[in-house]
Length: 129
Image 1 (spheres, rainbow, N blue to C red):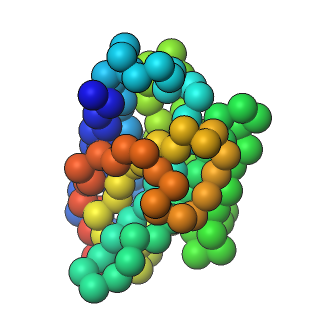
Image 2 (cartoon, rainbow, N blue to C red; image 1 turned 120 degrees about the vertical axis):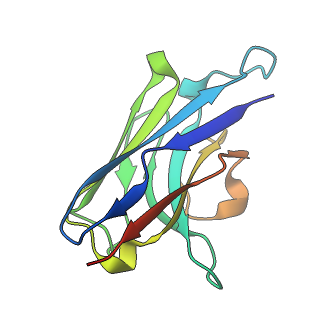
């Protein structure tokens, strides 16, 4: 069974930086390799739908960001480690939420949450003065 585990969240002040990690395992019986999946980072707050904040495709490595985080967040991946990362700079209070890593076997990026095959448990990010 494929599993994803996020880490790196915490409580920080506005203007601070955090780097989130997403470590994947369990591909031996899946018929796919981690490198074949697109990776998406989404965040969620109470009463709000899960919102995409970053995505990196599989084949060409193209990255995508919504306007709310563009220029502040950077997504990356290390296929040798079955890992994805989200570097978050210049954090704002509105960035607060639970951040989830998802992977999508279609290999191309999407903001549609149902495209993603697997999700981690989430890691809490709180930005407050």
